[in-house]
Length: 224
Image (cartoon, rainbow, N blue to C red):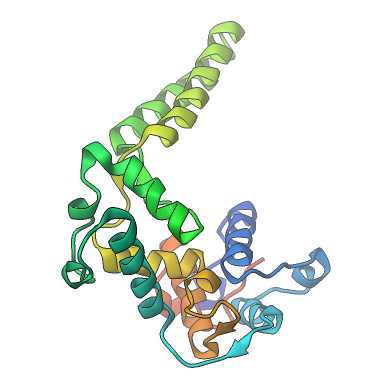
């Protein structure tokens, strides 16, 4: 596979979902006309930079996100700020028994979702097996197949609501996650951004979501 073809084998719907996440993070909006002219990763980066109408100010956003998170932890969970470092395990501040309750308190204070909790892998795997098996049953018994699909879908929904597994391990990793998913709200001043961070952040977002080598996300890498 050529370097510039690295994104061509990725489902266009998955890319569309990721573009929606980018819109949310940077608080921008892409029109269909704008996206129709985008064919490479470099062009997308240029479009994002063009759409951001904020003051360019130096300052590491991940660091600012950490400070915001540290303050939120201190205020809502009554933990001494001095004990909150980037390598502090989240299990310390989000013990399993109180994890969902404490996470919701942090989210209310910060003003956005952390998306840090998920169901256990074994449960998702089991539900996926049930779903696939049910699709197969549709050709033999439509009622049983449909019932299985409905049960699997209901299971996925319920699992997301009650899941307590942590998607990241430390406060520092959570700060990086916040920066990717809520860039503008992570800044000390939400009316500013750091122009020098945007391209590297987009590379990180695409690399993490699609399991791609960052070195292959060149300006020439084709999107569609």
